[in-house]
Length: 458
Image (tube, rainbow, N blue to C red; front, side):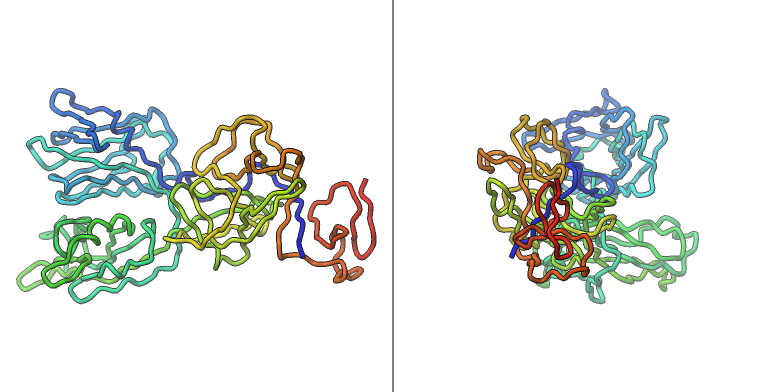
């Protein structure tokens, strides 16, 4: 049997509540077209492979201009270096009042710099600048990628095992995505002012060719942490085996004194799965959705949420088939849930197959189309779209997939029906069924069965 749903929702669909609409936004090109603060003593070169060589003087700057931009919603800014940085580096985000709103630094020898933006006022950003802060002589900083991240994460951590020397095997991260968050936690006891701002440790590959980070400097007794993603660790995790045949990373902590009195101890390494939070608008139980570029989602274990792909189209209907996997790559989907509810959908390395899917998706940006070239959800049906711009994260159906004689299309979902023979008078007030026993959520003109009786809507 089939259940026919005349869906009453507009093109705007649901809300991707992951703050920023774009989960990963590459801004490398902005720095490639950016400027150096000291044009007489610094240079910027864009290389053939797209990397940027910044010949940096101490406390100079390679910057990109934002004027007066609202960057609210981004949670991290990440700078990746093509090779280990030859000096300490830092990144600054400054507002229109020339105040530094966010700042982060990284030691020499690392291959990335992560700046946490959560809780920062990013409403009036004027410029972002990268500096080197330790070498009196100019040195080349080779930048491969600069990008914002805005993923949400689960609140329940998964323990990642490490041995007494802080060794974590590469295999411990198998099956997780580049976007999953990793938190390294450690404690400091026995602090005195003699050790103020001393290094507390490092995260690097077992072989030692790649250092992810120098751990935050010691400022007193207490609990400290360093946060990154599995993707941030990847270069170190993929380094060659050490002399003992071990491939992985080392979570190093350093203690001081003779005998040791300022003690730094590893406490835990926890992984938090990346999720996309989607909120259904009030009064809407179905929405259209298209995931961000490069993202795969798995709705298998998300209670109360069902995803559908379009498997076929006739002259009168769009046929939906349930899917557990939701993919980017220009695909669109229909999601069914509870009005007003928010669902945390896990990002996965490999989602279940979605099978045939005729729906297209806009992913991270507004998509321009020709008028009357696509069908969108409007007033309870798929209707020919007379406009030319479809918002980000929405689904649409190309007119070329629809029979030429088709007009508005109702939506049919397989395997979810209740036949007329099962309808009992008075058991389900005001629930409409068509004459084939298919439930109709938003009936239009026609003949229906309501509470066991025939009803005509004119």
